[in-house]
Amino acid sequence: MSNPVDDFEDYDSFKLAGVKSPGVCTFPQAPERIEGWEQQIPNGNGGFTIHKRTPPIEWDMELYVWVGEDEFGNPVNGFEDYRKFKKIYKTLIKKNDPKALSFSHPLTDDLDPPVTSVVISKWGNPKPDGVGGGTARLHVLEYRPFIPKPVTKLDGTFVEKKDKNADVKAILNAKLQTLDAVRGPRT
Image (tube, rainbow, N blue to C red; front, top):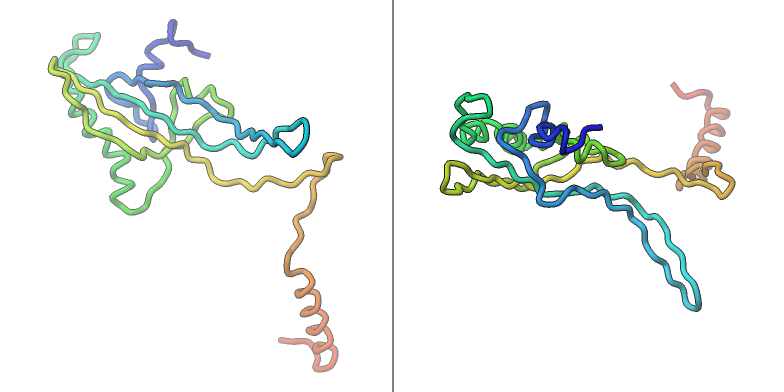
């Protein structure tokens, strides 16, 4: 596992839809996985907690871009790079076909479960800082499809979900079988 001291360049960018972000990426606050524990306090003494859910997370990121040179002396126009980069998430919104995008950064890869898909819910253009650079802010929402949780008995076995219409279906099937017996099979 990388760390920000020895592998700082891994933390300077993220990948969105497989494309490396321009400039230097920072997090005002590291993304945190919130567990959905809820305290239950009945009348009387005592209480207990129940785990309701683990919701998707959201966080803010900042991209600092600049015009100048990179560490190797190559010319950099971070503003133009950002214009190209933001087309990734703008295109999906313009097509009226929003989709989640693959995402990777060490701070979110190490969460349990790791963040693998996101949507960019809010973004802005880089605000110039007056010395050749600018900061763009992004608000990111984790995307996780809904997965129904199976019901478990105390002994650890799963409870089969009952069909609400099972009794009506049984009556209908019985009547259809009676009709088939009288008229012959349906074709």
